[in-house]
Length: 468
Ligand code: BGC
Image (cartoon, rainbow, N blue to C red; front, side, top):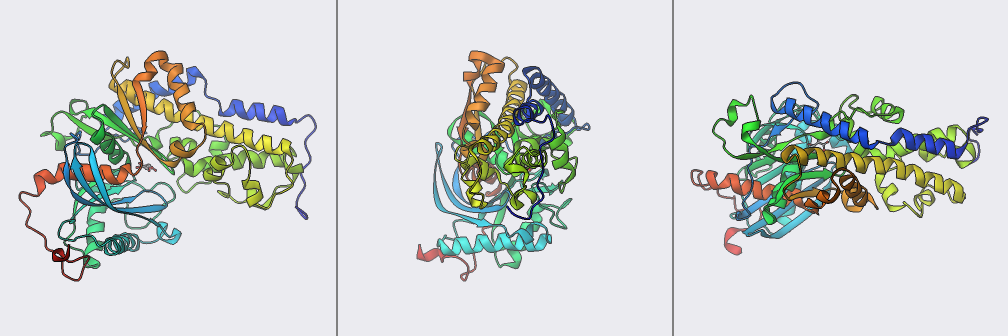
């Protein structure tokens, strides 16, 4: 910590006062939560009628799965920094078996490169995975594509990317049909016999995976690198969509709540937003999701250092770099602060560790309360007095791994609904986006396969049909 600017604490500025003020800035009162829910409902209403809204309310062209779906599917899931490739056999009655499940890291250069390079990489990963796992190409020809970005779907198997989120800026994809882009990449790799049976958002896949095992499931939520939610909406409430004229009953609607403006941003949120790749977009995501919590905490910590309130006024290099503090580090080190050692900060006092811990609490608790307010808004939209049972299928590392996060979400529901909060259950759905995409594809495939010609895999690709 030598040769660094040393900040002195300004007269009268006290650590406890600063932390209390910061807690106040990140706090959302009960009244504030109610207002957020009311505002959310107004935006839902507008989005469902295709009026201007911060909630896109995108129809998915997928109805409620019955749980009886069967079939063999390849699934790819492009979520954030990872690509998942799965090979799934749905056995009906909520049962399935995974023949393969692999994770690939998206090279950072591809997240900002050209569309063809990204889709070629996805096709390469799919090919490598099925070859390695000796997947029978005669059986697994239907592909379910979970694409975790806002897409205006044109049908169950086509849709145009509206805009990238989560740090992606790949050229030549926005405004284009991502199914066509993956189909072209598959063709370039000699995999043209693979048919994209369904395109889904990760929330829709998570909901479908939830429904597959539990008919009371009516909402899917992602709390991970990004955040979003979908739910089952009555077709009659979705307006100005002539393409849905033939639909009856319910359809999964993707809210794209990451873009919701909760109207309670503070100066740290505004700093983060201003320096982001997508200013003035994805407000809710920037307050809630794993991609941003570390950065929000870092901004608070840097201000404390600059006021001479932390680390003896010396800003360690690691905290000077945007996004150097990750939400994963916050989650793993809530108590022990071991990440400070990772950053070669071995001599941090107990008092400073407590301050950092308090900053993490303030930032993560707001995230959990907002996420839970979003769930309350969607559930109360479906069922104003919470008279029915609702199962919420949830996936994402923030929900699954951040200590205390789920408890904080539950506390908010109890504050809002008392005993009735017990009618809302959170069900963690790991791998939901892969399995659920297969479930959605199975529903779509039932109508598709009867008329489609048999596609034959070339001998050289994957595993020969007659060798299984
Ligand atoms: C995307 C959503 C996605 C969510 C979670 C957001 O950035 O806009 O489509 O569901 O991340 O992955």
